[in-house]
Structures are given as structure tokens and as C-alpha cells.
Length: 339
Image 1 (cartoon, rainbow, N blue to C red):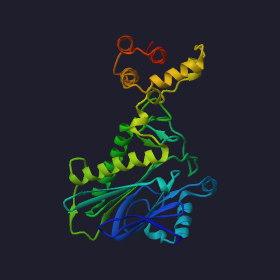
Image 2: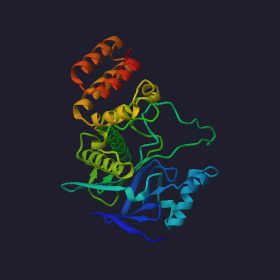
Image 3: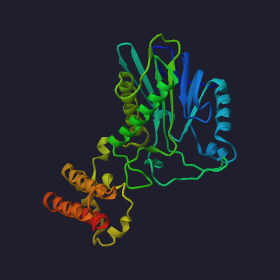
Image 4: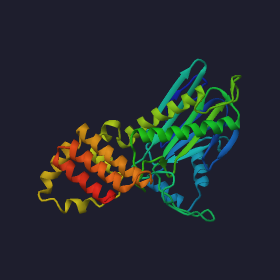
């Protein structure tokens, strides 16, 4: 294996290293797991390692003429690990921006090793598809949330699947907490189009648990590890934080509008934009914007009548916003979506 740098170790002897463009997790115990990877995907026993790999543009070009499984087999060989006993995830996120979170409760221990890129490929379940696959031929964009979850307890295949569902739901919570927009619709993202996850249990443990859902302590720890690690990985990779999202402009970004149409009707654009940027950070303006956007969402989801929502949005804007640039841009949004 190439030169490697230790970034994580746990009570079961697992060790995670950054090795060139990959994070390699070497297991200290015999592990079973479920992976979404093309390499040993689904349920499998006797995993010895798992890895998360950064795809450079050069390697993306390689994939145009090779299968993902072929690429992962090649990468396993480069990393010096046995491809029969590993599984690998692919991403465009830098390994240096990975986040590792570990949680404990009594004898339970759960860790999540996460990379996250959401600027290009964030999407909402049910958005229009990016490709149609037939006979194994398709193209994809890479902007991915990859999660490797480790537990110190023994889990049967069904419980592992239960934990994978919990981790997936937790991913959606993390994105919703940051109000990450879908790049393909006006909704909030629930993930990206190429997310990967692998979850593993300790086959040597005498502590065998039967549930990893939201009511269980194991499920709680899985979810908390995933939420915290995704939030921090997003911060490191694309600099999106709760603070950066507390902005009128950040909240409006998820709506597909030609903003140039709005600016065409503005006289002194430079001065207007300066005033808009200053006013956009005021929390009262963010609150007004969020309230109006929620009404737009209710109409788009056919939960409110458009006329009712328009009247309420108009009242909110007139009675609660004093900054002209915010009034102007929110009026544009109201007229586009509710009139």
C-alpha cells in the first residue's frame, strides 16, 4: 500500500487512513455489512476493509470506457487490498475534507466516516431523472455524499438494512437542517444523485442487537453520527454552514428563476446589489423570506390555494419588511409563483 496517514481508530481495532486519493478503513475484527457499491454490493460477510475514493477528472474519463466495478477493482489493486473482501465508494469530494464522528452509549459504539459534496449534484427524491439506463450504458455526474458506518455490535442482515435506512433518513435530516437546495427542482435536497453508503457490524461481538431503527438507541447513535459528520463534511468541502445559509439570497437560490429578468428593471444595479447584500443578512428579512417561500412551497405541493397564499404573502411582506431591496426581490418572487 502507498504512504498512508492515520485519521481514525476505534475500540474494535479498526483504523482509517488517508492514502493518496482514498480513505481506507482496515477492520480490526471480522465484519459483515451492506454496501451500495458496485464492488461487493448488497450483503456480504467477512469484509476486511472498505474504502472511499476521490475521482479525479482523469479517472472520470477512464470510466467512460470501463465499468465502475472495473475501476474499483483496479483501485483495490493500487491500494494493495484484497478486492474479494472489500467494498468501495466513489466521490468528487476531497478525502482531506472527510469528517469522522463517534458516539457512545454504555457498551454501544458507532462511528461514521463521511465525505460530502452538494453544490453540483444535490437532488430531491422524485426530481426528474438525470439519465436512463439500458444495458448498462449511462452517464452520471459526481457530487456525492458517501458514508461508512461502523458499529461494535453484531447485526443480522435485516438489522443492517434497518440501520442503512436510518442512516439514509439521517442524511436527509442533515441536508434539511442546512436547507440545501435541489439542483433539479425548487425543493430541498434529500441527497445527491450518486450517494453511497456502507454499514458494518462486528461479527465477533457477543452483543447481538435486533433493531437499528429510530426508536432504538443504536438507531439514535447511527443517526447522530451521520447528521453531525455530514454537516461538518459539507462545511469543509463546500463551505456551507448554518451561518452561510442565514441569508435571503441563499434561501431564494433553490428557485429556478432568471434573475437577470429581475435586474433588468433596476436602475442603478451596482448600488442596488450593495444594498441587497447588506439587507439580505438581517435575520428579520430572512424570517420574512422563509415565511413567503413556505407559502410558495405549500402551493407547489397543492396544500394551499394560490389566491390565499398570495394574500398572506403580500400581507407578510407589507407589514414586516422595511428594506427596499428585499421588498423588491420578494415582490418579484411572489408575482412569479403566486400571481
